[in-house]
Length: 309
Image 1 (cartoon, one colour):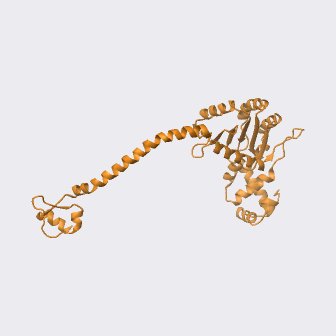
Image 2 (image 1 turned 180 degrees about the horizontal axis):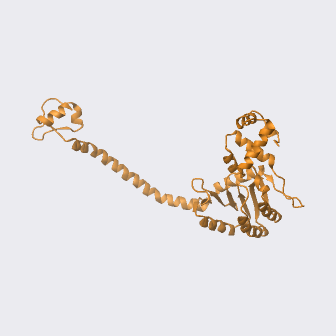
Image 3 (image 1 turned 90 degrees about the vertical axis):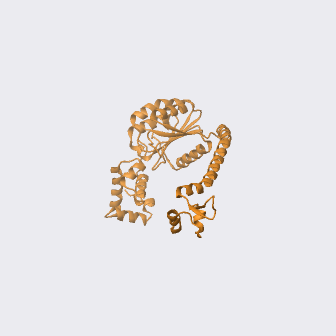
């Protein structure tokens, strides 16, 4: 930099200079006398250095664009053939009206089977009232219907009344303590699931990819095999409650560190019910705190072996 400063202050230099000043273009021989080295403004030197690199980068960008454009045609062909062969569509549905219309369309095209998983406990009575006539009509047409609920529906009168009517018409209903998220599968060809990355109440995914739908059917069947049948006695008594299974699920989640609120959401029960199950277990084991109860349960097989009533 001292030699560069000298060239700026005193004019072109004849003395030896560091090679870097020549390589960076900060000193350049004069056309009329190549033995003299004249100072060059840094921005001009920078531009001269960058120009060939920028030109090479631009050529690479043009090459990348050409590759993309050339293969875009093949991509269109690939998507068209794949869609016709395996159903690759995964569509995002936004808005309750759009979701309802897509579900209705799938319902209208039903041929033999509908599988549904409905977590969250009891169903709103108005929803059940709207669904019942269509469900009974499809069952009368020979459409098979299998539905998974959580154990908590066994205490909800409107849900039980709906279940009793559809099972009498041929539907099958089972319950589990925990369920994966909402799922509806029509004829094993199209499935509807919520989008966990967005608002699950206003968005959904309609899936027609055969491999994904087959996977979801497998998930449903695995849960179905573990679920408890929901049968009504001839005297129309409510089906047996699953108190022990629910309490075990509450205690297992408590040991894993879930709060009462998180447990209630996963099991479809109220936080008051969660607290009641934990209190019952605490009384049975004479534990003085939640931490001690979790320790006693974690260090034993009590959750699996004992009905803590």
